[in-house]
Length: 206
Image (cartoon, rainbow, N blue to C red; front, side, top):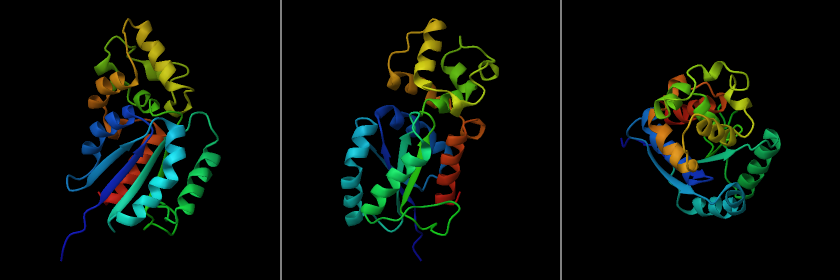
């Protein structure tokens, strides 16, 4: 009997998200799991083109395939954003995967990075300091940084921290390339990251 191998199609807001997942997924998933990235030009572009993209998947997605939509929350109401994404999925006549509800065979996985994917960097201060050693060792104990997902505008915060420490960070992509290789999924304190990780592990049964 042929072994069924999971394939994941990731729909991402931008190139920095792809950089992060390229580093993280090999640490999280079995080697037999395959995946591909489809990068949009920001959140608005993703939401605008999502319906058409999902309808396209109906024609060629294999039975073992899953679609993962990863979207920044960006201070939006989480419930409203998820409802909007669910509506788009429903209009494309695809089912939604759920960890807890009956439909665990759903095709589409919706996950939010709260507030932005850069919050995942604050969830792993050791990785941050490996990439940028002059950052404070006790950063996660400082007021405003104890809960990664509660940090408003994490990218702006991170950029300011790096400049204060004497670094010239460049853009999101450059920073992601420096930090991502050091990220350890098991120690990340971001709740939104751990939910993302647990869902992928559940889907891939690892």
